[in-house]
Amino acid sequence: MRKILFFIPLVFWGCTISQKITYKTDDLVADKSVKPIPAVVDVRAFTDNRDSFEANSVLFSNPHQMRLDGKQVCINSEKHYKKDTVVNQFSRILAEHFNKARLFEMSLYNRSEYSNYYLTGTLNSFYAQQEFSSGAAVGASFGLIGALATSGIKTPGKIVIDVSDLKLFKKDGTLVKDFGSFYKEYVDEFKVDAYCWCAFWNANLMLKDFNTFLIEKIRNDMEGVALE
Image (tube, rainbow, N blue to C red; front, side):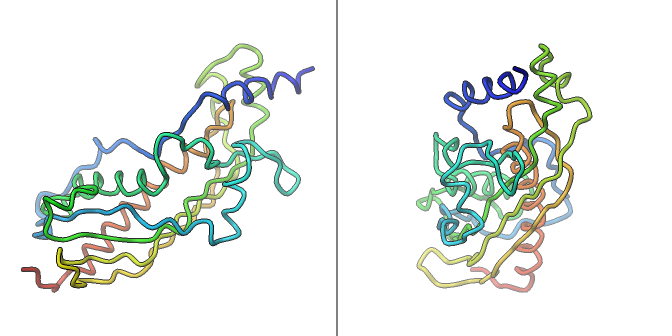
């Protein structure tokens, strides 16, 4: 009977919850001594290349809780990114992070009419998977909610974020800088929730880290590059 209790909430919430790719940027404090790169940059929606990689296939054909390699796992299933595409959300939060980090004079998202440069890229992976926590589900089944149901519980997981073809162009299409690819794989113990939404939330947290390092790569690669 207890096993049924674990899964009833998942079916119910699975029909109603839409997830977003976002994270808090209020705590991102830019070093005032660092001068922004003198460009107004339009971050264009990345090209979505995730379906070209077999490792991503489970995201497109499964619910957010599934059985994989003999274990119940939570994944950031594509079906719950309903309100906007993954690449649109991914690119939008990147532009917001650029502004908080004062990377460029100004960063916009899909607003080319106000920019004199634009940035393009390809998203190859935004993949999160971690083991489902039966302990968190037990807590929820006994009426515990939120932090009480998941207090101190973590499960092993993996989050992979991979972008390539990251390029900065002048507005007329002239290539300014090819930044190449940037890949990070996070293998760790991640926080859980009772209903398996943790894969989405933890992917967002690691994206914040990913974008922080990506910004430093762009800043370093732009040293010595002359802009008009």
